[in-house]
Image (cartoon, rainbow, N blue to C red; front, side, top):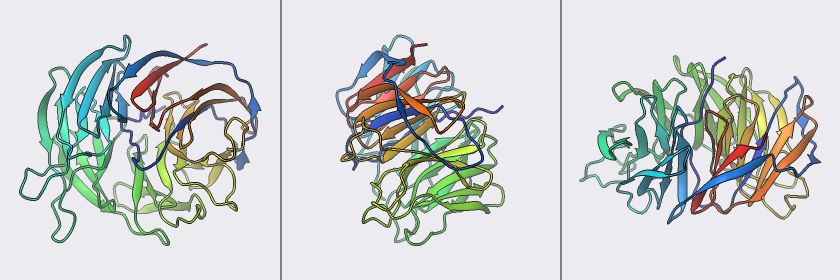
Length: 381
């Protein structure tokens, strides 16, 4: 079995509060809308809290789970924390020009990546910062794609994702209409994959994730989930994930993630659904053909109907039994499923601040963004 650990996390800064749902899934060949059986046992507990002076925009566990990195203060402050004790190990400041993107990620050899701040054409323009977390020193300024005449004046990474083996990195710039693929052994650009527009929303890449075997990459292109072959750049499938959301015809998927076995892809929408849209904001798709496997329904009493059931981030646990979802509303939820995907129970419920960040460590520990702090949760059994 191949495992994929989500190493880069982002939050879209123009949305409000967030909540968390963690689900354990059992799939069948047909589509299911998940019914809920409420059971408010505290099956996960907060073991410690990591305070920040300013808003937290991104977080990522190291590959070995020994450290957690956070990005705060509008992208200007990178902080390294010890995973066991919760002690602060190192802080690194970087140029942000008020906002430097929210992507942060670890490399397989224990170095740390963050998005570089936007620069003018007459300045030193580059895409990402590569840090030594032990010393806090900046090791390398990683170049982005060449600037295009008449295009965006900067090419810093707005988001990026490191593959399971750590050998590949994909990034997008603010133009969000292409993926730039890097070889992390020397940080050279291997290829640039142009993302074609899909009517009616056009081209807007909000999220992407490597398959565990690193042969393809899943892309949230507007309202469509696309799987692209990394070798020949062909589109294996293009699935319409959501219908019209409210008055918006533009992009709606805020996050996607492959399951560790590579069989499923989870998607989370960031816009409130229209009244005629089916329930089940968070959805699970077959990675083989893009067919819908399950819908995680949103109509439980713990989340009042007036609240926004949309979500902005998803992350699978390393063993593939749980899925963390950061919703746009302000309640943490933990869902646990039995052998039948149509039955579930809530085993954890907690309100959080406006962060919208979730990330599993290798041992199943969960980090949750909570505004100006990060909560560390562990299972109570």
